[in-house]
Length: 361
Figure 1 (cartoon, one colour):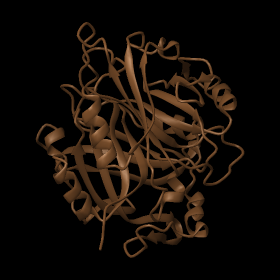
Figure 2 (spheres, helix red, strand yellow; figure 1 turned 120 degrees about the vertical axis):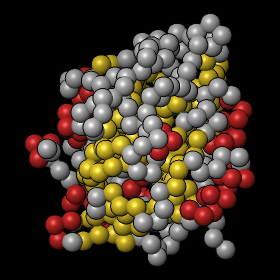
Figure 3 (tube, helix red, strand yellow; figure 1 turned 180 degrees about the vertical axis):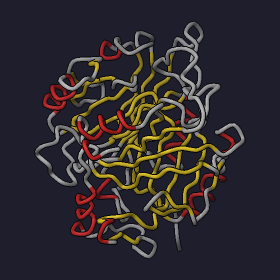
Figure 4 (cartoon, one colour; figure 1 turned 90 degrees about the vertical axis):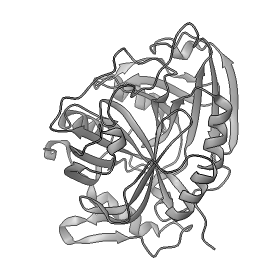
């Protein structure tokens, strides 16, 4: 009997006004070197979030060889992008911060500081017990680098890995804990703390009082590509001063694809089982791309739900990804075991998809 399988965080989507410079920076500075696809087309299946009409776009999906989720860098085309009506505040409803893995946190700090990042904290110990720090990229996206020893490919030249999770601003903490626990299997509370936090003081809105809950999965990582993505966690953050310092949605009065974090994407197996679980929890699919969807050289079935705060959560059941495109070599995943990772000799071949920043155009 088939059941839903949440393999891990596949990627975090980040909207940009112009794609090339951010893509080059994420490649060179943050090590997102493995290009899975670079696709220019029309977003025809997200109409509720694109003003009711198809929107041209260019999207690049890239991974860091050290492992973790990837970045989907997304540029709307043919229209003027819209920035937030006011500067975003920590605790705004949506993806506030993207978490990044790093084995050597101090080395990652030095690399980012020397390459144009705005440092928002020193290296310190988080309330959840690991070394971390915050920074802002040149396009005002906030990241948190966290100590994590996981390595898919142990590339000594990289000071950090890929996506380790996200910080999501929420309205109702209990409803959000239930959603991420029951639908996405982040069912274990690592920590639950309330107060003001010195580490957040340089983030806009970070001086307010917050409740912060860290969630992780009790299940081991599983699925064909799970070795590449590794483990992850989700931090839910709720502003306790919201009556005096109002929080709103990070994409309030804007389209999906506008600048900032636009979605959190999970690699999954057995989409019909995901659909049944989402409907049972009261969060039915709001978009369904169907099983025939191509993104450049990759192929899969994508769907979306909204979490209790309106944050877009994407599910992708991957059928095909390129390994060495110029030789016509792909990973075909449609008939693979739903739980077992692919042999590493197959997944590590994806290192041949690396692209140098000077080749990006």
